[in-house]
Image: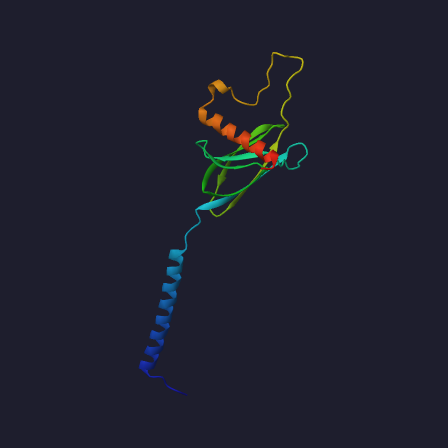
Length: 163
């Protein structure tokens, strides 16, 4: 049986302490450079409420709470990476009533939204004095909203032309 001297035991302890110290420093440095995610994913699909089928030509606008457009998609599907926060989805289609959904995007997570569109009401043929309108009165509309609607209509038109 071999007897170890005190200096040999001290050397082994110092070597183990050094290796653990280097490993701990490396682990801490890697964690310091690792940043927490600041963005999340938003995935939305637009479907017909009566049939459950996707509505491919619906225009989906992703807006901030201040009503600024962040993204716009004209195919009824949204897949965006967005900073964490609250957003509003606005869905427009000529054959369906407009839909609005408030969503919250959480950093590092995916937020899935399914928007079911209801068929637009048809104007009443019996009552010519009643006007069915899905849009706000243009007289009381802000210029920014009118511009947003114009851009949306132009994109929809160009999308139908295949451009």
